[in-house]
Image (cartoon, rainbow, N blue to C red; front, side, top):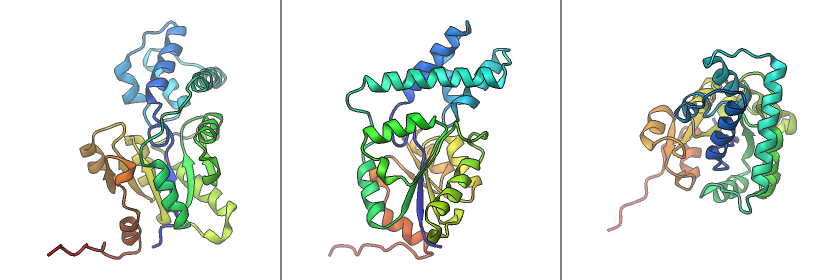
Length: 242
């Protein structure tokens, strides 16, 4: 099997913005006259869509809301996120990201973003980071009903990449997922894809236990070794120096 596409999560893989999301979610709960619990955000929200996250946070507090009300909360949070991002002169992306994208482009491997974030947030950040042109497809959280750990987003990315380039003839087994959360790793595996767990949000040993590959940093991912594994070849071992 050949590696043909790499599918990136967004928050926690491309942009280091989890603290901002926690702050905005806390603010929404306060505006709803509900008590926030900072420790709860990692458990309920990390790796999941804003819609799924807010629905569960409200439900845990005995609040059941309509779909329309959830839409309003998600829109309010997204607007606040865009306003905060606009104030940041240099967005905090992760070390090794640009180099990995360069390697993937050189190897003619397609790239997509699959995230629970709202599309407008993804597009703005990619544009600000000068990365938008490298991603043929974006699957955003406001475009699908299911949230990670459901595999729907990753499977939709395969379909969209094939629409973008029918000659790709992409299958889930041709895809590598890069994730930082438990929900995201589970989604990638459920889609029939191999997953890299990058230790941006959880310790390395947790990523190692759950994913096919684990790295501390994106710069640690050895693309040639990954390609060899996809091709069913044992990785080349460098000869020992005499």
